[in-house]
Image 1 (tube, helix red, strand yellow):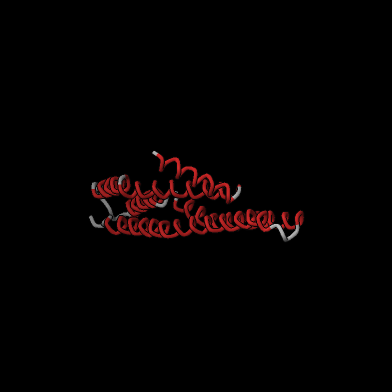
Image 2 (tube, rainbow, N blue to C red; image 1 turned 60 degrees about the vertical axis):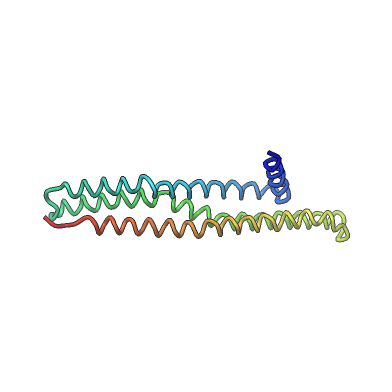
Length: 175
């Protein structure tokens, strides 16, 4: 149990070093990962059932060649595409937001450094170090958050595209 309290204290100290912007970065990264996990769970569970339901509904039709049948097929594929791509644009937005918040942290940290320099001159290195850490830690956290999300959002969006194309190809137009 000691490791848990040590971990909590280390995280708290890290958050204090990064300043207020680091809290926003943590919220954005947390939200991004919640959405990523939701999409992974969807791909592993609900998507297969929905694909099978659409496939069964289409195959149970007696007529599949008319314009009306073609429009119904397009509707089924579109509904599947919407459900499969849900939250992916939001994840992409959060990934893009991470480095921007890191840059904001850099700017606010450098403002702190300049304030210390204005008040006490450039001789107070210890006071300037807090501002420098407040400038660099959010930058690093924003980049780590963005990099962790870029790979997974790319994998998720490609998987969504692949599944939509697979469903579209599997719905035959004969009869």
